[in-house]
Length: 199
Image 1 (spheres, rainbow, N blue to C red):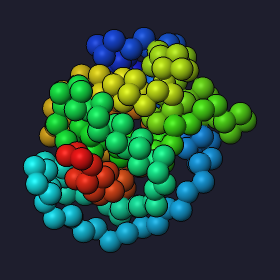
Image 2 (image 1 turned 180 degrees about the horizontal axis):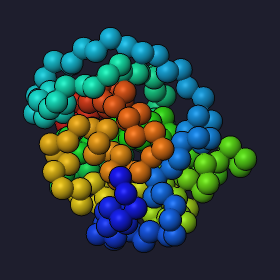
Image 3 (image 1 turned 180 degrees about the vertical axis):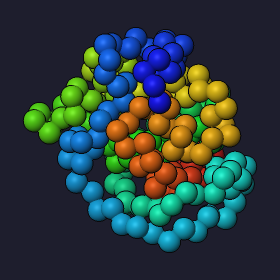
Image 4 (image 1 turned 90 degrees about the vertical axis):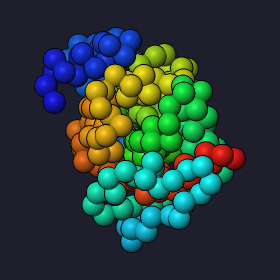
């Protein structure tokens, strides 16, 4: 993605783009600083839950090997906060799947504060958003509803995001150094949305 497209996506989303730095994190340090048991899993699309069909959640099928981590209560609460913010924004389940998969990649669904020397620039929160790139103040970015709403504002400005593979939609908003990494979390994100969308 060229710099002009990055700036236009963020500009239209109402996010100030500072300098030439990427709006999303460059995962080199912070994303790998979060300890987690990541294990590849066989892909098995969960049976439809009432009101949430798998075609809505994973319209293109998952791409590539899938990863899955065990979640604690705080991580599940953060997934529920992402779902609540998605509903409040009036967006469909697919937007929640993209958001949760993005957060799984960026922070393992942990609301990260500053990690000191392990921090990736000034990346914070569920989505590793950067105050210096216009995502908000540190206090805002570490609020799950605010950070999700900011991510969704960016997503809504991506033409055709509903029809894109998950990793392409997420990457267009996040501008990551590892653009294909989001795809591995699609199944777990879809399972979380199926389980919690109507709860």
